[in-house]
Each structure stands twice: as structure tokens, then as C-alpha cells.
Image (tube, rainbow, N blue to C red; front, side):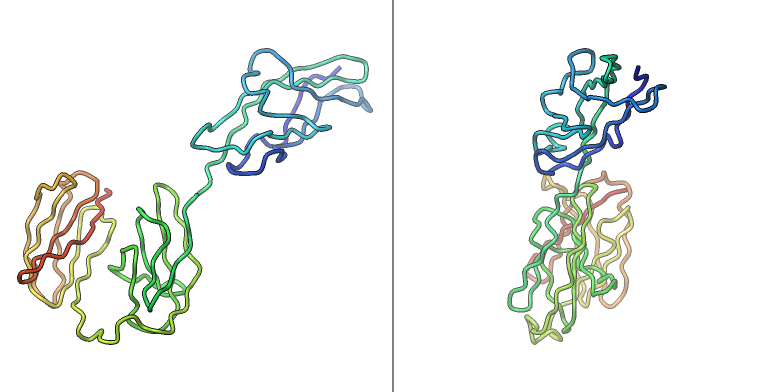
Length: 252
């Protein structure tokens, strides 16, 4: 009689098509040459039997799984030999969380924009040169070349394909003001480089000013915000009568 039951894989990626195989069933039996039939049966651990089916020795899922909806399933499987002797076993099928971050970039008039909204961005010059301070959803290259963006949502990070930029969006880059803030996200230390003096207000998501600073032109201005709670902040720079806002993420 069968004494054990195995499943070659108990993990399946989310978003796979219905009827995708999960794994292959096999039996342990002291009698060599025995053949086995596999069925889903009622009993302890059969909570999600209806979500699965068995074809031959292949366990298949009947739906397209979604990690955010349900991350694991419980089933009970029986192996029966040709003499009718059987062995039951419970399995937990785990759904693998797959990154669902959009990894494409749109180019228009020399400006690159990540198609994924509400993320953390880091633009690079291909193949792997980090562009310090370029952390917005859109990026305007100042030189013809190939660029990509690393997009992070939660624990998932993806990198776009490299996009060739052959036309610059602004021919007057030498007149463009410089304001670079890094690292962003920050663990508590923030560096800012600018080509002009400015007053800064760091504002939380409630609109409260939590820190004020002054920056000097043509030097690295370093500030410590380790005393602030993790989260999203807005750095408002006052340039004459104009206020420009930059997003800063603190993640210690």
C-alpha cells in the first residue's frame, strides 16, 4: 500500500492562467511496480479543494491566482494503488508575489516619463550610471544618450529598458537652474547642491513645517533629518518670489 505522497512543487506564481500545473504527484510504496490514481478528497485540510483539479498525476489550479487576494491554499490529496489501498496527505499551496510594477517609459519632446505612477524613481544613464538627484517620475536629459529608470513600489523594483534620446527637450540647458538632492530615499542624511542661495522649508504630509534650512550656492549642503519619522516630505525652496517643491522620502 502507499505510505507517502509527494508534490514536486507547492509554489505557484500569481497571475498565471487558469489550468496551469502546480506540480507533479508521486507516491511511495514498498511494492515496486504499483500504479496510482490521485484524487482530491474531503477531510482535514480540504478547504480549497474546489480551486484545484488533478489530471493524471498533475495538480492544476482552476483559477488565475492573485497574491493580494489569497496568498495560500489548503488541499487534501489521496493516492490509491491498483488494489484500492489509499494514503491521504494535506498540502499548502503558496502563491508567489510577483512584482506588478509597470516598467515602461514614454518619450515626448526629449522628456522621459516613467509610466508607473506613485513610485520611487531613480534615473540612470545606460548601462548603469546613477544620475544623482534625478528622482522624479519625469526626467529631461541634458545630453543625447541612452537612459532608463529604476522604479520601486513597496518591496518590488524593476528597471525599464534603455531608451535612446536623440532630441533634447530644452536647448538652453546652460540657463537651467541646478538643484540636486540626494540620496533620495534618504536614511537621514540629505545632501543638496544648488547654483543659487535659497531658504528651505521641509514640510510633512500634514502641511506642517518640521525643519528650516538655508543652502549656499556651489557647495554641498548637508542636513540631518534622522529625528524625523519615516515617510514622505516636501522640500520647498524659496527662490525670490517663487516656491519650488521637491519630494523627499525618508526611510531609515
